[in-house]
View 1 (cartoon, rainbow, N blue to C red):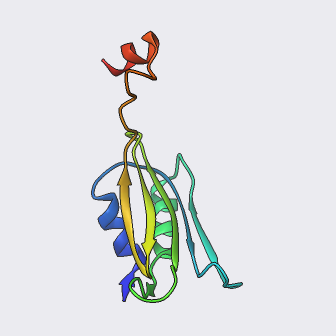
View 2: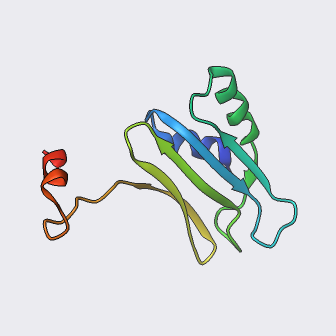
Length: 111
């Protein structure tokens, strides 16, 4: 069993969170709950959001139970993944644009 709040804190790992949208409940479940942290949040709103995630769920068996994304101020994000009933958070970054696709403007922005 996993605690969604503890997972969120561990995944953000000191990164500055911009916003988040997390849904709890299976795809087929009518009793799904959505947890939203809007950009520009206050400390109080952050505490309320974390409190809404303070629940246990099974992240290792059956269908996916936790869905969503966490966006960070540095332009990266964490995306919820699942395979064969096991769930995890995965940190994503924008890949470097290959030279074949880049224009002069894009190349200047990468330097």
